[in-house]
Image (cartoon, rainbow, N blue to C red):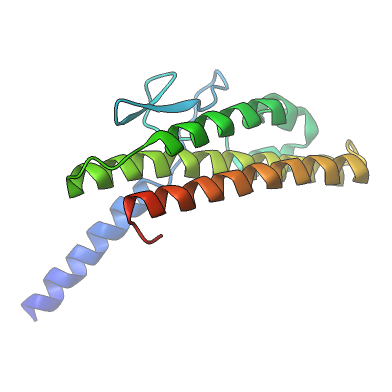
Length: 170
């Protein structure tokens, strides 16, 4: 009985920690995450933890239409630059030899890659909202969605290379 109680409490605590990490930080200034990994530590341009997306909720963007989507969503050129920087940083990361340090460095890079993937997903959601609202024709929607898909592929490839280099099976 005592084992069940401990197991239940542990599972509840773990679930609470995981759910707490899934929230998004927002502020009124419409800041976007610009993460780079330097010196083995993920740092953003405003000092927040890497991986937090600070450009509002995706649900609000989709519901409010194109005006809010255009104000809150990063454009494809900015996303392309962020992806290139994150991929380059991840490709430069090398294992140091100690298991704990390697895991930490791997997770810092993976967090940055995952945050950018979520940012691209938000961009794609905004494109879809613009298309559904008639602000974007089908050809433009398809072209921009394909560009975003290529960025996601670059992130996936970088993550695969990172996993291979660090010997971590994703």
